[in-house]
Length: 336
Image 1 (cartoon, helix red, strand yellow):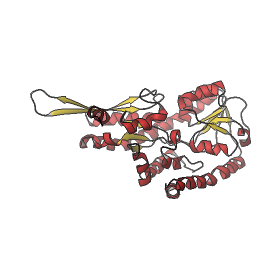
Image 2 (image 1 turned 135 degrees about the vertical axis):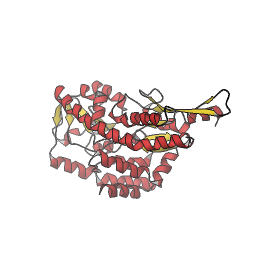
Image 3 (image 1 turned 180 degrees about the horizontal axis):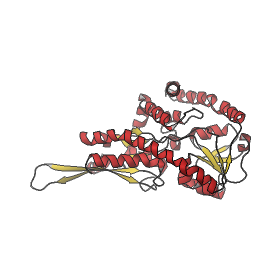
């Protein structure tokens, strides 16, 4: 690697102090995000705040929103080449690049709450196969961005039963999209920032998000109905750092960074609780019809999109030389 490029990767600015033989090193990392500040990014905001406090401002995380550093689908690529030191991405944006993480996006896993999701993510991220998978992109997993089960905001006639999704073009990624295929829907890959326009223009009839994203990306302004209990799954969106940049941190900066991850996640969880204080009033204010499907229809959906898709995922991973069965059993053991 070119010497100048390596310094950029390591986020290092060196200042020689006149009259002294020593040098003072200040560090700044660039962090690639998308959209705007929202519940989904609050742990990154808190991490930056704590790291700066613990190092007296000598180690700064510069958070870049709106895809100003990279498109959301290219954040992992940016990490791999050292275009920036830290980034957030979603596994389903490029499942082929991070196949091990997709175990966390399987439908109907039955994760009961965000706290459990955090522990589940932490266990999977620490698995050697997952670490090896991400290391191919020079990426080290830092923390998750736990999200509740996805549900759909849609435009037009609201579905009254699960079978009404047959033939419906929907924005649904990863395991959520695969699950929707089992009931005849047509999943389409649309980035978060493009989703409002996709619904508004009729490119898709409905889009799946967690509540914070429906608010942040204004899908409730384009739609007129929301499913309360479809709950087909969620998307896994970790925060990663460039391995070279992390390894180059001075010990005190590394300690400041590592010790701030736990409090950052705690802050995220507390913030996400407040999302629902906005979500339900917003649905009421905008006259969004709330659609709740009968339990027997949800059970039938789960029977199609649960174990059969898990088995298919394990077979696919095994064919790639990835310990799919082991990863799924790890997930199930944590949930049980």
